[in-house]
Length: 115
Image (cartoon, rainbow, N blue to C red; front, side, top):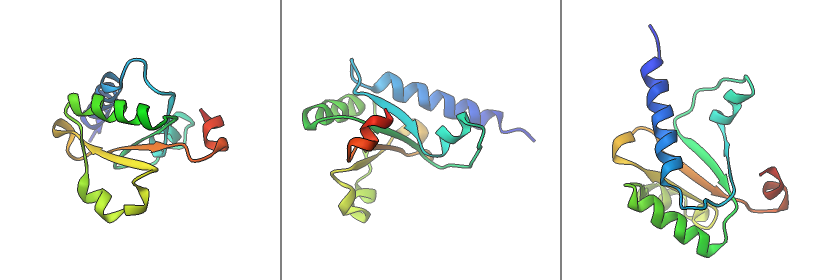
């Protein structure tokens, strides 16, 4: 049995995400379990995590751009993670309902230097 359709779906979703970022996008990198795969450490994941450097105005532009492409903030997730509101947002897209998109904003210089 192959997981090819799952990989194609994930690749399609990544392309959808990248096409939904504002122009120019804030500096970002793929982090979390998907990023591990690039280093040969495959791990199962149920979300896509991006780390971004974005001031408040850039965050608003980012959220608006994602909203225009069908992404919506997952309010249930925010309600369950109230301390994450300034640090992270979880988005859902109707075409990829089983894969959340987590946008994490840098919290310190070390994270910013990661990018």
